[in-house]
Amino acid sequence: MSDKSENLIFDIYKEEQVFHDSFQYFCYKNCYLNILRYYKVKNPEFYINYSLDWIFLKNDDLKWGFDFKIGNINDNLLSPFDKKILKVDKTIKSCDEIWKSDIEYLKQDIPVVVAVDVYYLKYTPYYYKKHSIHSIIIAGYEEENDKIYVIDWYPSWYFKGEITKNELDMARNSLNDHDGILSGIPINYQSSVICRSDFSEDEIKLIKNQLEKTLNKFYQVNSDKNTVKGELNGYRAINEISVFLEDNMSLKGQKRVKFLEYMYEKLYFIYSRKELFYWFLERVEDEYPIISVRNTQDALEKTMKSWKIILSLIIKCTIKNTDGDYEKILIIMEQIMAEEKRFYYSLYDLNRRVNLIT
Image 1 (cartoon, rainbow, N blue to C red):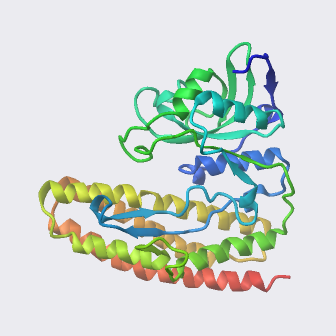
Image 2 (cartoon, rainbow, N blue to C red):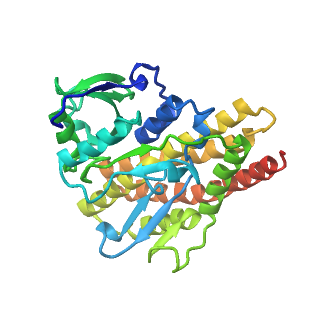
């Protein structure tokens, strides 16, 4: 820490934190939500990006020739408010440098969201047991006592307390060795802050933005100008998953098992992201009962159930490894394609009705 001893503990540390079950795999979004609450933003949940954005990247250099993501992990606030998120300078490569940068924000009463590996956090059940990327909030520090006050409002630990700088350094500089989902990618000092500035957008406009973002991504036609070569979005991305599953059915033995294990990791978060979007629709109806979201929720729920079945079948197929189970995966994927279309038709209708509100 710096030569001069300082102590700073901010009000966010003393305030009540929130956590909604739908944020289970989106801890960074929950950090942003709690910071916006601290900034006294009205209905801060409407500024969070919940859009459904599927990205399929086909490249022979990748493992199994493809990658699949649920959008940009850093796309956490809706435009134009995403510009208020400032990322740490990527040229910073040491713990002391990054801490100096953190302190500059903390002195301005701006909490810092940092990525960590739970493997190095004593208060979690994963301490020295399992690697996994996670996000916490730095809410203050005491230099003379080597204490850093953090908020990690996440089940099952719901922690608000002190860690040492050395513990923080190890957690944010971890290689995050691969041992399952949310591991395998180095933490590399990732951190960000949300600027304290105007968050006073019309809520109906925010809702429109959210719906249109999802619709545009789903029906996006990729062009060489703005898309990575081999990248497909939305419906075309899901269709390509189906194609890859069908093309690899001929794999046998452990090779098929390894392929399906990789596919499972890539598809794992589809259900949880849809669950998050479902929660957003609930919040829309809570605030604006005039906007009926029931049809859209029903259509969304059908896709969620089918994706859950797909994941269960993939697990079953990695254990029993039968052609019959694999064929069931392909049948459900065909069903999903139809259900996804119906969901987006209902979303289009919802967006049309929201646009009629003045």
